[in-house]
Length: 325
Image 1 (cartoon, rainbow, N blue to C red):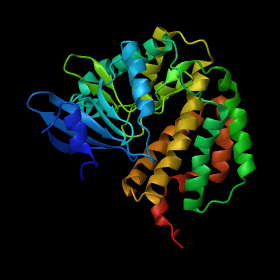
Image 2: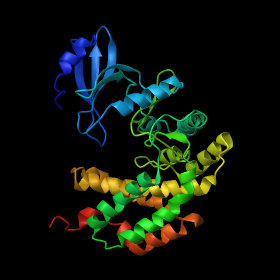
Image 3: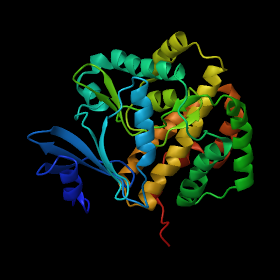
Image 4: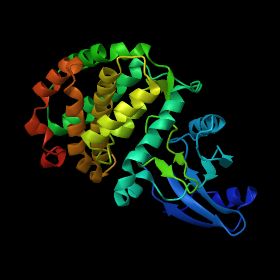
């Protein structure tokens, strides 16, 4: 992975001249990441968020908001917004996911600490940014109809799909009141040497429902969270946050919305971007979605899925179909 154009000039201008630069694992976007190591300055992470595909300003804005309210977001060392370069604090490599793979006995304590951060976020004035409005919720669930349904060759009525989801989501649109990080899960929570948890990958934050990030954490698209642990942590959150809404129904609804979106996204990552490995996550996503749809308040949504995507279809993968013609 070649370093971005202009990197040497950027590092030299900000006191990191002569540093060693090596790639680190990225995510599902156009962003790339490099570790920068200097004998004098120590380590940093370079985010390469090249325009026009990426814009690093939302990341910087949310990072500064989180740091201002004593959450552990990476410190911003230097920026070049024209090139999309951001030099930021290196949180190391100890992600929550890999740590728990080795130290499963820490699971309860680590998840409670992650939930404690969400409880604090509920009590913190929301960041100045866009709302998680109905248009956004609908645009996300339509990723299923735009990518998964054609990939599986399933006919459906788009207006019926939109009507079912609009009716289901309407009750939560009056509960948009907290900063929602939107991708808060075990691969984006870093376990730091000082015992704190660092937060990364929050550039898409919106003002939305307090249950959304809890869904992201406890219905993790990339890590199995047992139903027993999910129930335990939901009870812990309810006890510590004392939510005002019809919390469990809203949690199930947002879980269904998010998991529907992710099934569409993972299909798109395969079909459009050639990232076939994301198809291996679909069985987990269907299992999570089915748990959410079991809530009585989601009966109309469950009926739509049972009618259009029955179990035998959910258990097959798009690669089994000849959809390239």
